[in-house]
Image 1: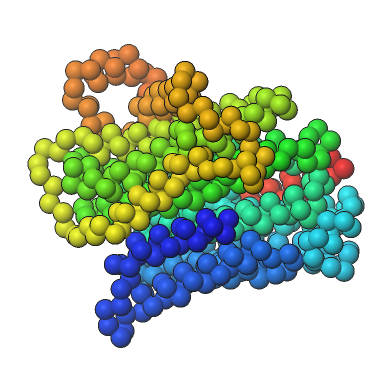
Image 2: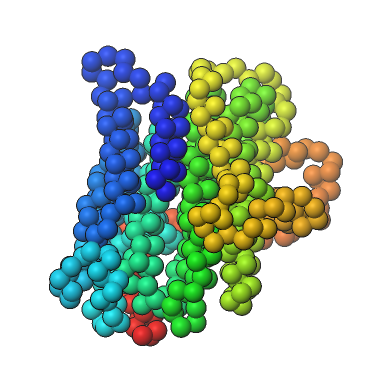
Length: 499
């Protein structure tokens, strides 16, 4: 995680060098951006190496207070509103986390992770603390339905800031949650609570992906894609714990963290590529991307490779992570999470295919770029995308419980089937769930296809509209507050039931 953070921040710094170059003494945004970027780097490094729950709290708050101003660097009213939503909801999460740490300190007189791991027992105070701290960290990670702040914050921020927020900032609270469940109180939350986390992750995958396919702006699509990909990270919890609630599989934990690393590099590359496209075209409307692959080939290539890596195509890190998790679904007999993993790959393919179909469609007239497209920006995004795509080729067996043959079968029928399943399923989902005109909408083949699948598509579009309206309700303050309370109660109930 330290290495991933360093690589992503260095690439984002190269990308941002043209956007945040000081032009005058009064240029505050460039000065603020570089200070905040270094603060985020320091906060994340502290999270990854700290051994005390209160130190983790301080680092998490530093991360929040450095990330919030990045959202509103341009000073527009809508970005200020998004930053305030982020700040207030993150502070609610911080209060819950701090209440949990206070309970643990009152019970055991220490917050040292190593000491607590040997002292905690399944009494009511510990379980309440675990439920409070978990809920607070879920709010900061923006796991569905606690994603009040994520879409407007990621979509309204500058491209470099969005890349940092999506790739790294949400990983800080997720990493603390992993430390809490696997280091501080291993096995105490129980299998029922782990199943609940994965169920919330499944909701994130479905809701985030469907709403992403209905977005008109490319940056909003990527923001909702982040919501969906966050859900992927929580599928490891029920696979790592056995029926007794004890940790049984290092492989599932390795798969989840490898997915986090792969997502960080790929999603940062995609946000950076979208930033280059916006700079060149002056907009990021998906239906207005015709011909952009010819006008901005490197930007589209970086986006495509990042999307392909997220889809789980071999030899990407996401492919290896998915393979590890699928092996554990077979080992534990939890086949329903295998269905979710496959469906998540199809949904990811759907919005990647949707964007690329518009980007590669021929334009009726030549595209006149309104802004410069520095080569360094595209190369930085492309480097991150390639990192994610080839992450599975690294010798992970020296560091993680990865089977040797997981990275060796890159060719053959098995690899082809793993590629065709998400591609075909994703193409079908893109056709059925996206309400926008298709680039081939005037062709005879498209009209013939619509005569066959037209009724099904209309039903899917109505369902997608209902999901989108549900998402709008969940992102209201009243609904978000109720969701926060319900999640904490459900977590507490599941932990008490298991113990």
